[in-house]
Picture 1 (cartoon, rainbow, N blue to C red):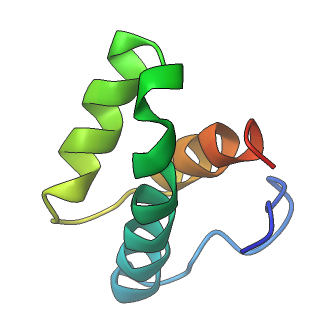
Picture 2: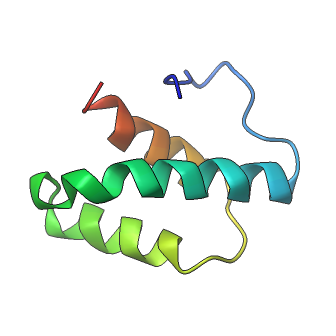
Length: 68
């Protein structure tokens, strides 16, 4: 998965945002120890499922961008 800038698709529907968020969370799981406590809590919360906002998806993308 490549990093997406803010100008690219934010996932126009809930299922697409959830799918991408799940993929990002899976990839970030190997890097949890490198995240701050608030970032870890966010990733853990996102792993629980539920709706994903555009802002949450952008934050996950930014976090993943640190490890590419």
